[in-house]
Length: 317
Ligand SMILES: NC(=O)c1ccc[n+]([C@@H]2O[C@H](COP(=O)([O-])OP(=O)(O)OC[C@H]3O[C@@H](n4cnc5c(N)ncnc54)[C@H](OP(=O)(O)O)[C@@H]3O)[C@@H](O)[C@H]2O)c1
Image (cartoon, rainbow, N blue to C red):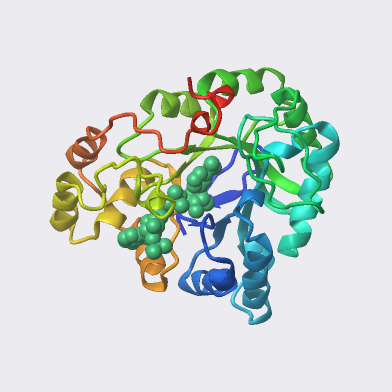
């Protein structure tokens, strides 16, 4: 399986994984089991997705049936914004590991560089963006405090690798100034409408692996009514023409546009046929001119921007 070797641990992170956001709770265990059967080894979860328990059940079934061993899998999860203070990071990592039924994560990411007021998981989990009063409550945990607490997860064997998500170059550079363990992965929104070339250059320079999320652009946001009326990338002429040239589907072309440049992808699908189709995106090569023509679709369209929830959350300003 195509993979990226992560710095520090030399662990192999599969280039193509399965994204768990919006995977329905009632079908999640079956979907994860079927995805493992289809060949997926990386699962990208998060406390915020609210389906870690069900994902863990799918994994347990696959291990019991002898399809895989734990060490064959690469399980990613993420720390939510309400748990950024140093006393909550380990509590939540353990809480989430219990949900999965695992004793370590292969990768644990800080989901957003945003610290919100603590919500006791016994009260509500996942807590989401707002308190019981439907308002956003900020908390004063600086990013460094959270990162140092993440490092202790590595020391204690709860996470093999740690990383960041939704952080810009300025903050990434800053983390490298104090990190005892440098972030090994940065997970960012990246698709032909948001190509982020300067960020990729920086990540390369720092030796940090990049995982691209929302590879299908607005497609994943349609089901939430948050697609910003963007033209579907799947139906875009440029993508469709490249797809027919190679005898591949638009989805496979969009994923190959990323994986051919060494970016990991984590497409999500609730359909067994489509998850099989998505995994099959590394065995052909696009010509450089086709990569360029897809990249030229860039319009800096950011679909995941917390400033739309509250103006104080303008992390990409
Ligand atoms: N770090 C972060 O803040 C962050 C944010 C967003 C996402 N993520 C991660 O990235 C993953 C993927 O991103 P995403 O959920 O935004 O969406 P995505 O994978 O770009 O797109 C998913 C959408 O595309 C459809 N689809 C999947 N495969 C298809 C195919 N072969 N042909 C046609 N349609 C297809 C899916 O529908 P069906 O399900 O019906 O197939 C779904 O509507 C998430 O699950 C999550 O793990 C991380």
